[in-house]
Length: 291
Ligand SMILES: [Zn+2]
Image (cartoon, rainbow, N blue to C red):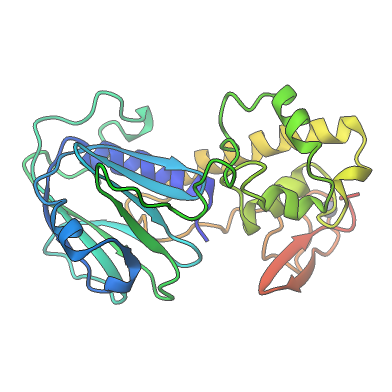
């Protein structure tokens, strides 16, 4: 499942590659992935892409008229490709982009001069692919009220990497959530963007067990969890910037310390990593160094 680090890379890269270009074609080979009418999809053609952003686990395309929001859920992936490149199977939505006169002035510095950014004169395509078709592409035409499940005021807290999520804000928000730490981190209403993989990583970094209750934490442990959240996500974003492009459709997870590494030695203490499966999700942690 794409989480904050994965989608941050896609958003920064697609913004650098595509902002300033107009949509030249819009197709939905798997129309069930689209929340919106065929007419609304066609109405994207001719609109200029102003920005690509991430919010929580959503990718947002800001056009000069409408907006499109993608929730990739478990298996949704994004590809940036030349129009003539072979389209992968299970492609759900394809947006074609035309030439532009210069890239955006606010592109992320790491994208500067990247070889995978199409020439300004070249056409390009974004393909959204989803083998399980659980993800959705929400079309939000200007003036149309359409709710995006998971994006409501009450449903989504601040992004886990939002600079306004200070330690004081964290201490205040976490009080409302007495339950298990893994569930707490994955709860988008607490902070947005963390899922099954990075919750395991953050808890390992904070040396806290996933099934421990927040109500049992000492105040220093609450602060450690805050620090581990910031450092774990920032480190992952740094690594992914170097490793993901140009295959944005690949999820790079091999550098993680514990998630899905059950049976392997913990990189910090050498204890064999434990793995628990519940509700279709794997939780990985170390009994040796997490308390
Ligand atoms: Zn360990």
